Length: 210
Image 1 (cartoon, one colour):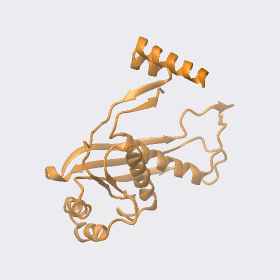
Image 2 (image 1 turned 45 degrees about the vertical axis):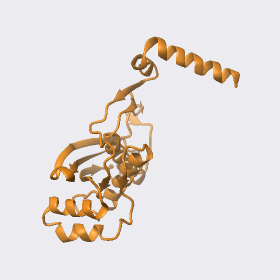
Image 3 (image 1 turned 120 degrees about the vertical axis):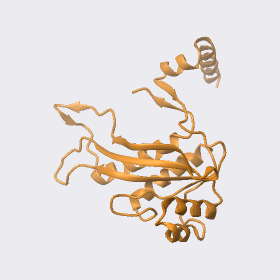
């Protein structure tokens, strides 16, 4: 206990002496500012679509939504609706108006009493080929937009064709990755990372220096 207290005091004194930025750099971290601050506004996340499935219908789109929502909720960034089953009437509201996307988003916002609507798309995803032995890495492209429905459905944040790569920082031996990850696990990891990446856009946080 005494040793832990001494170490904590030493870390505090070091932080006071050199400043937060330098301390984080010494730990291999840097501060990433929020791209958009929801400022307490309630958000609803519509399950993403993919090249085959519509919004609400893509299992992989739901995985991204789940992990984005978990991150936002888990870090108390802003109130968020994202867990299925959605409140009664949400899917019906979308289906009734989906011929006009903005009208559909407004209907979903009204049905969930939300100010912000987050929606996005899986554009492409690669997790290797069936004959691969020891996949080097996978990648995917995702786009997303956040609309403020209280300001006339104004887009307040977006990413276009954001590339998600997994795993990062691979080690190699004789040109072959030392990481042998099953394709299904690689695909799941990329989807989870995409959701977390989107969630992180809405608050200031620390990340490893690459």
